[in-house]
Length: 160
Image 1 (cartoon, rainbow, N blue to C red):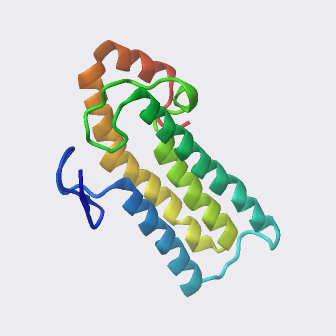
Image 2 (cartoon, rainbow, N blue to C red):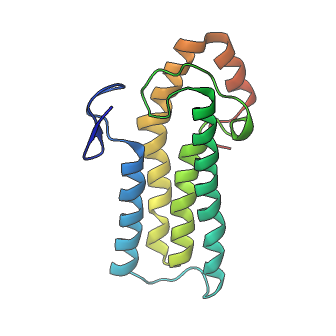
Image 3 (tube, one colour):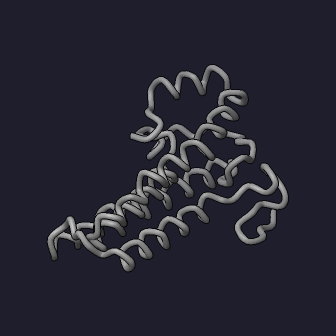
């Protein structure tokens, strides 16, 4: 597999932008909004340091989920056919830990920045990931794993 400017050329669906690109776009957008319109500040000074919690949790969730995919021998990249339905570890809490991690990372950065507009990026990213990736991936998983997927879907929420 090769990548060109964040787009897949082989495997999965050609021309699809990788979710990590959207994470970077969201982080840049939050920073730009913060620096262009830093007021109003919605979190008092020093309390903003609590942003490290969701930021760190988001990074940790991504690392754990990535490791689980690799251990199971199933692709991490979106739109590639899964070979195994991973349901253990962090996947017992959320069906989409990596996307949840992305949202937590952006939320943590918004808390660190304290400005109201930087928070606006968080729900936009969540909706984008839900519509562009999660919905498609879940249809693929349903087609591939049938009843096992339906049972897992009943037990575990999409986000948390």
